[in-house]
Amino acid sequence: MSASVRAPVTAAELPALRRRVRAVLIATQILGGLGIAIGVALAAVLATEVGGTEALAGLASTATVAGPALLAMPLAALMASRGRRAGLVLAYLLGAVGAGVVVLGAVVGSFPLLLVGLVGFGAGSSANLAARFAAADLAEPDHRARAISTVVWATTIGAVLGPNVAAPAGKSVAGLGVPAAAGPFVWAAGVFVLAAAVVALLLRPDPLLTAR
Image 1: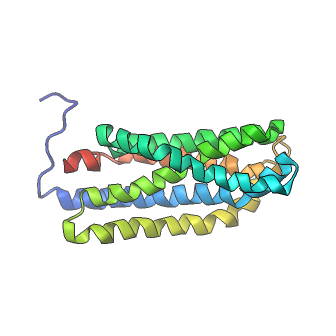
Image 2: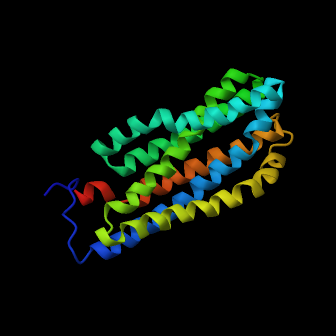
């Protein structure tokens, strides 16, 4: 057998694999929820500062929602062909790149660039949403609802922590030429990269491909 081909998972190995997949997804849901909440907490404020008017602040929230909407179908197609790991890693990395573009838009004072970044930043939400389906891939039919709800609940932890670390994130960029309101997006980029690394390294074997 080729070294690149993994032997099928046996029935005896499934319980341990289910626990491993659940633990990885819970960890990434907390990280993803944290990254999203950090940025969303200051998105409208940053849009007001860069755009120069409160009337444009609403576009920031719209942009963060547009990201998951635009990515939903391509992400589903990627996962169907390459598995959950490939899709989740891509979505988290897109969220990290988007957060970086937000910071760049804030530094140069470009509102259009800021909106483009917020669309990419919203892709991080796609990863958290898709992870819920990954939780059900290997779950027993009678336990799928519980598996999904456990992963969804984990997102709450990150969502609660996010707004509370927004202030320290803003202060952390003082003296770097980055607006304080963009500081949370610097942190969000790092959190998304960490979430992508956790998925890439630990979500093995891929739950969807294994289920098939």
